[in-house]
Structures are given as C-alpha cells and as structure tokens.
Image 1 (cartoon, rainbow, N blue to C red):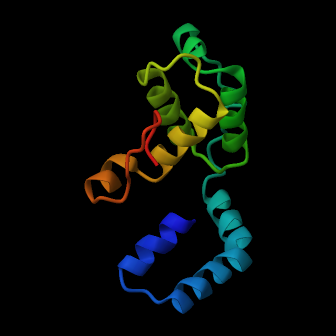
Image 2 (tube, rainbow, N blue to C red):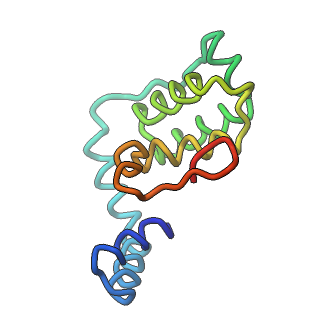
Length: 130
C-alpha cells in the first residue's frame, strides 16, 4: 500500500487526493469485487492445484498452502498463481517458506520486472528484492 502511495505522490497527486481515493476504495471495494466476479462466473475454476515433484521439492507445504489460500480468496488469479509457482521453482532456493512466498507474490503482483526498470525497487542484502 505504501508503494502505491509513493508512486502516486511521485506522479503529482496530493496526499489529500490519495487519502480520498484510498477511503473510496475501502468503502466501495466489495461492490467492485462483486461486479468483477459476476463477469468471470462463466467458466468454473478448478477446485485444486496439485504440485508436481520438482515443484513440491522447491516449495514448502506451508508456502503452497498460503499461496493457495490467497487464490481461493480471489486475491490472486489462476495466472498469478501459476506465475508465482514458476518463479518459485526457477529461483532454485531450498524449500521456500511462507516469507519467501510472500516476497515472490509481491514481485509478481506488482509486476516487478517492469517496475524495476523504472527504479521502483531496491535490492537488499537478503535473498529477495524489496
């Protein structure tokens, strides 16, 4: 959330405008979610996603459970989930935990590659970007 606010400030919006927009989203977000969900009701989603062996070796059960939970809450799309799993496997870290998964989710959802080229992200001494 802070990242979004910083970007809006850089783009010239005032703090009052940003606060008003955030308040509006908080009060109307559920209505927007229902409208979007109605548009997507035509194709049923699969109930589960099973990891194959090399995915299971790369991602801890707790991290996958966290990811799957976000998908079931419609916070992540099916495409986001697949991109996150692919990114997690390609990182070749031993048994990603929930914290690692949260970092990868942020990178995918915020479109890390595009925004990094614009200078919005910094690398720190730990394994992942922030």
